[in-house]
Amino acid sequence: MCLSLFVQDIGIDLGTANTLIYTKAKGIVLNEPSVIAVDESTKKILAVGKAAKSMIGRAPEHIRVVRPLQDGVISDFMMTQAMLKEFLRKVLPERGIFTRARIVVGVPSGVTGVEKRAVEEVVRQMGAKEVYILDEPMAAAIGVGIPVDAPNGHMIADIGGGTSDIAIIALGGIVNSVSLRVASDEMDEAIIAYMRKNYNLHIGEKTAEDLKIKIGCIYPDADRTDTRMIMEAKGRDVITGLPKSVSISSMDMIKALEETITIIVEGIKNTLENAPPELAADIVANGIVLTGGGALIKGLDKLIEQQTGINVTVADNALEAVAEGTGKSLRKIQNIKRYTTRDKRF
View 1 (cartoon, rainbow, N blue to C red):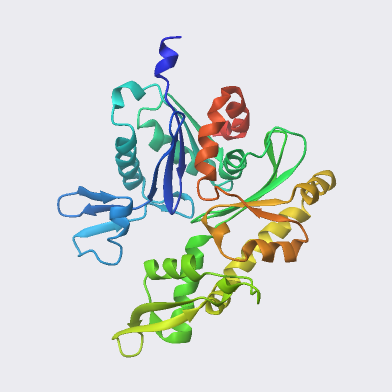
View 2 (cartoon, rainbow, N blue to C red):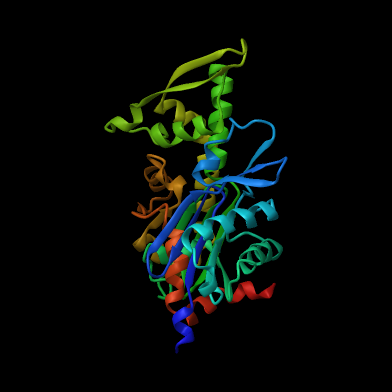
């Protein structure tokens, strides 16, 4: 019993865009961009999280600013390990008593066994006693309070930074799922391409992200003022090479995001089409829940409702759902073992 007092339960949403850490005692204790900056000449870590993200597009040649996760998986093992160590150091300063930590990490449902093993290896090297790899749709469902162990079917779409994970859940498992490597990052790229093509303006990733967050819209509604918002975008003129700024409206965002959003909506429709009839009936009654940063695009819920005929709800904790789900899943250890049983094949 005494030893159990020193077991630290931790949930980690190791996302392409942001890393969130959840502890049983305090809830979410860290929410930082998944970015790390390193001095190439000395190999010294200069910054992680928000501080590192502010360096993107501004750093001199000897400073390398890295996003070590791409499309929901580790693309740079060493940088991911270094970044996660720094994040854990921020929230778990007394490392000695956490050698018995039990950690759940959320990963996209479509990653391979090799990719899951890479994530597990990074976390184990942090000194964790037990590591569980949980599919993000399941984690998100737990995080928003969906009764995942019930026989009734529920549908969730987690639109993150690198992947969009869509799943139908019942009886503690994922019955049917689709993992698309099209999500918020692709939305930013689509905005950059649109600005270059239509305004001869080359903008950076941060500007594209700001446009998406502040005036991003996908469903025109004459009764909503947020579909007529305007924002100034600054960048470099493609023709003259000189600094330039233009006024962009939410209608521009609808055009810029149309292709990317269509892929996500089609993924949702395909998942519904492959649902067993009984579960399809449950989803009609229970609706679809959206989580992840991409779920906050204005009008996305209305567009999906129009395309599917099913009620769509954006979770109140859309940005934190996966992290909260990974942490809450550890409340009943026998359940987390069942949720992750199919991951033991690797």
